[in-house]
Length: 140
Image 1 (cartoon, rainbow, N blue to C red):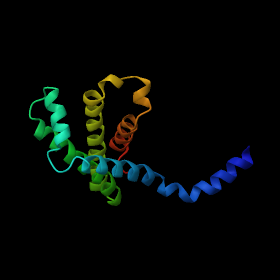
Image 2 (spheres, rainbow, N blue to C red):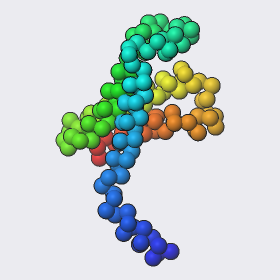
Image 3 (tube, one colour):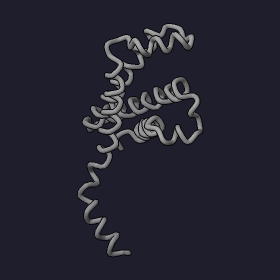
Image 4 (tube, rainbow, N blue to C red):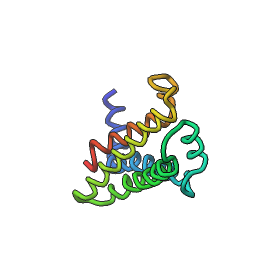
């Protein structure tokens, strides 16, 4: 078992510096694409859904969600490129924005999924977890 572990370590060691980037690029790209899919603003389908649910100011809220998704996704990626405290803050704020947006998405759009198998088999919970990870960890 030790030989297998040593072999796997020898393969993994040179890749260790890029492992945070796998998470960062996956989350950032996903959020940019989710937000971009809501353009042009305001996102009409989302506005109609918010109106049917009785939410106030759906054009403003849905536009802010789209801009927040694109901005948070870009911030996760850009923050990682900045090797200083500003980059760390950008990463943390962007991760926090992802987490907040995903809490809203889970509670508003997928409230029937709460603490169910469906939630834990969806991408939403993983986007929330990754956002929370970067909010806590930053660039460290």
